[in-house]
Length: 166
Image (cartoon, rainbow, N blue to C red; front, top):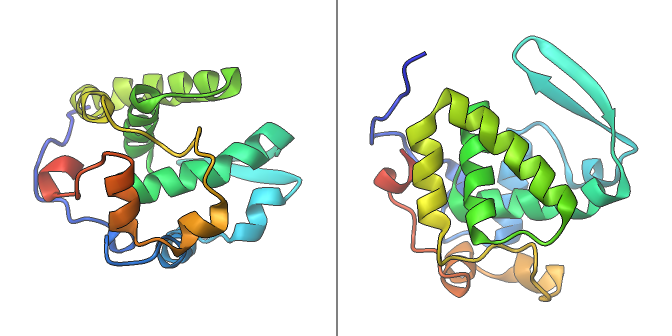
């Protein structure tokens, strides 16, 4: 399978730095056909192509998945398999706080690396020296009220460009 390495993929509408994090999260969740309530649901659906699995939603996932979604807003990476590989590589490079996260991120990064090795390595390099929200002590409501551009600046993530997202 040939890797797409073009530099003209537009940023997702939910990655606009002028939005508040709450506004961006709402647009992101709508684009994923889900809601904030799904974070605490007893199960979740994993869809990979034609395969759809309903899996348990354990407490560790309930705590980390909302932060993972906020990290998507910070990076602008989408949610297809290649992009989840990029997102996981970026999160790995920016620091993880639990064994659960290490396992999940290494797994997703490995899949992404098989599908799009250059994109995943670029995302990992991009994440070095930046921070994610997994270790943040800032209250969620405070984060949600920030502008996405301000949150990126606080975490050392430069404003996104088309080249960053390719």
